[in-house]
Length: 216
Image (tube, rainbow, N blue to C red; front, side):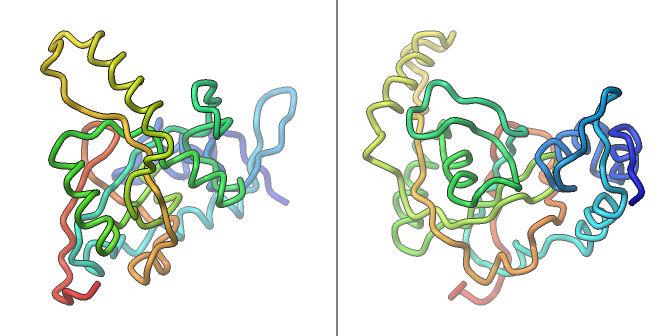
C-alpha cells in the first residue's frame, strides 16, 4: 500500500476551487478514510486520496435535479460540542454513523425571518434539500422537514446571548434553529463526494434549483 503524508495528500486535492485549507479540511473530515498516525504525522492511503479526486467530477448536478431552493451548509471537520446535550460533536466526519452525522450538521443555524419562513413553508410541505460541504466537497445530503421545536428553548437562549453581544443590539433578529432532517430524494443520487462551489460567504447559502420538473 502506498502511503502519502498529509502534505502530499493535500497537494493532490488542490484543484481549481479547492485550496490548501479546504483540501486539508476535507481530509480531516475523513473523505479519504482514516489516516495512519505515526510519530511524524498522518499518513493517507494514496489510492483513497486518488479516489476522492475521481469523485469530485463530473460537476455537481443537484441544482439541475430540483426546482426547490437548496440549503448548502459549510462546516468544519469534526470538533467537540459541549454546549448541546444531545450530541457530543459538530461538523463533518464521513466515517461516523449517519445518525451522528445528521445530529452534527442539523444545528445550530442562525436564520433570519425569510429563511424561517422558507423552512416553515417549503420544508413542511415538500422538504428543503440540505447539502453539507466541508472544504467545498459534499459530505452529507438530507431533506429539511422543519424545525425541531423540542430543542427550541436552547436555541432561544443562544439567540438571546448573540443579541446581547451584537453591536446591533435589539435589532439583531436571527434565531438559532435545529432542523428535523430526513433522507434525501433522487436529487442526491451519486452526488456524495462531488464539489459544490458556492463562492465566499457565511456558514450557509441558499441557492435556487433549476430543474423544469416542478415535482422534484
